[in-house]
Image 1 (tube, rainbow, N blue to C red):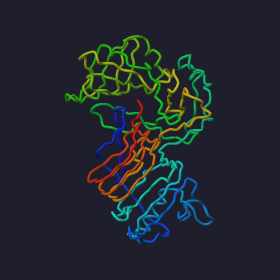
Image 2 (image 1 turned 90 degrees about the vertical axis):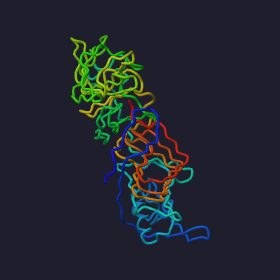
Image 3 (image 1 turned 60 degrees about the vertical axis):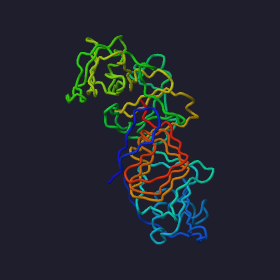
Length: 416
């Protein structure tokens, strides 16, 4: 079974969820030197991993020393630990991760072969005093951002921002999977967000209008389908708009509206099928759960994912057809760390693994969840940080007995 594509939450707060599924794999490794057992505990084996290590080494030393030194990847360390525990199952193991960023392009999968025992657990821990980051994203080269020179593109943002907006070719930066924007809201299946952008660790918002708040929704001409009331027509609703702002959006290819289209407790984000400037109407591409209703003053919306509304620092827009990302930088580009989220699966998944500990690690910049666990016991997550994830920090599935301590979760949700 493969790890699940994990869910995105609509709320703008970090959460720990209970529910769902995961995966695993494994094999291989050289021998290891173990510290002898003591009166207080079992024999122990120590391995080291570093972003500057070498997977051809044995991983028994924290620093390079001729023919040995730290391993380069967590996956290689897993194989080493599995091989050791097949021959010496009573040995406790610690894998110490040296400081730095470990980029993940797939899930780290722990299964029964990775398990420890109550007396001899397996620990993956950050080296003392060394920040360790597991990242599901990729950094962009700040020098690759250039002024926009194409006159047709320059004409689309507001005049006041045309000289502020810069562009970068994501494909030239090795980023080709942009993800797909999907509807989200009450009653909808939860899914991972598309690619997100981070500037010095802060998530940036898609270009939107208005920049703050919402505008009232106009008269409903067609409520569209309403699944809540067993009207399963795929037809999106149609409503009137006031003002002339949508006249700017005639070239928009992937326009979305977010807000309250029926009940005040049922927010939704829905793509737009068409805008009729003559009739002054907007037609949505799919129905709202309740259909479009007029039941009070709460119906309001804002538009997002619009190059035409890129009008303040921090806003951005991605043209998925060309791979060009447009940004009004919120700070000095030359000194910035700019990254995008890529990994579309759990960063770590444990299925049937027991007595495995994750200690002092930072999980960040991913479209999915941080850690998923199912069917195991005695696992521990200690002193870990989960941030800038597209969904949730930790998910506990069926048959789990786990301890957690000192977890920090923040900015764990897809950007609106």
